[in-house]
Length: 161
Ligand code: PNS
Image 1 (cartoon, rainbow, N blue to C red):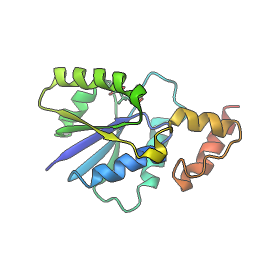
Image 2 (image 1 turned 90 degrees about the horizontal axis):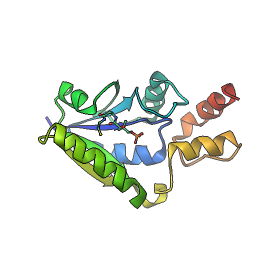
Image 3 (image 1 turned 90 degrees about the vertical axis):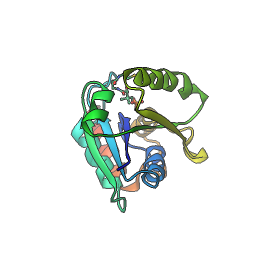
């Protein structure tokens, strides 16, 4: 069984992430979207909330699972018997950091491949941080994140004001 893990902070999930999830679901028997619990930037949403927002956005993708992980990604990959790390690339600016991570992960286990998928052109400018900034300043985020999670984002941002 070919299992791919798509790791990230997903704070919150965007249409750019959804694009990668949908396209990778066609390439693997199973895709696990793995929410990082211990990521350095202070997240707006808890790991449980981030997982729930992704879960709610996943209608009609039966071979996609949502989970979370703590510690080394490679340990998590092994625990799931996965063979591939899936990453999205938006622009050249993503490349250096992603390249470093891919090489470090290869050093940790050369049997696990990292594959990069180019984000669709229309989402190439999107990031979770930009979504939060625009929404916190009252801007419109329609079309940039899954429709049914938009109210959750505005509601959460109100609680931290
Ligand atoms: O969405 P992000 O912030 O780009 O996700 C980065 C993430 C969580 C995938 C990355 O930081 C990660 O894999 N963290 C786990 C810790 C780890 O395994 N580090 C060594 C690999 S370079």
